[in-house]
Length: 323
Image (cartoon, rainbow, N blue to C red; front, side):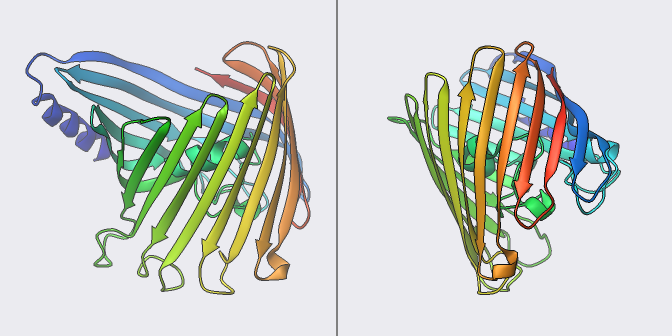
């Protein structure tokens, strides 16, 4: 049904052009990251860290364009899951639709329609600090989910302003529950700034009382900062959750990271992450270290470990191929 709707949307938009559409694509995209995973308390596993495939492309008309993307994630369908481990696409034997979206860029900004989408809020604010093979830290990483922001979302309508003097602002609305008499269950904004090697981002997510687990309105506040020069990059992110006291999401978390590129073949990253929960028993912190051996622009070998205070530590090695 979703693929039919995507085709109808493209066909209808095509009628807005005064000349025949110029197609770019479709081009196939994908990523395979596989190797060995050892989580404390569990036997060694052969693991799919990333297993995605999809298609993307665009249609261009007189002064108008449509970009489309569809990506499926097969990670959970390939992995043997238990409560101690995180799989990038959720439940066992599940093929997860990560992206099913259309983006319409114009001189007045870009408009997005996405029944499913990778989270721009997570990518733009958290991404630089949390981009690891296994220890990703977002809401869907289970017991090591240090942040409440997820890496994917559903039923998104969004608008991004044109970039001006290094700034861009992006607004989004979400409908998670289609039967609660609330057309918008949550909405968000993020403001992004970049100037040379310096970048800054701030954003909020506002969750309605009918969608929030507490039955009250909740807010998620986040900010990040980063700077790149020569072979180094430093980045940091902080998230504060404004929820009623004592709930599962009643915490503040932050992470800091240093990336170092030795040369074209070798790179490494070191991060520290900490969760300060209102319930002391839910506090956690950890160190994540990663080293990569780049074979070319599309293939690299990696070794990574996440060492945590209260949740199981892990060791991961493997190879990642992008195509």
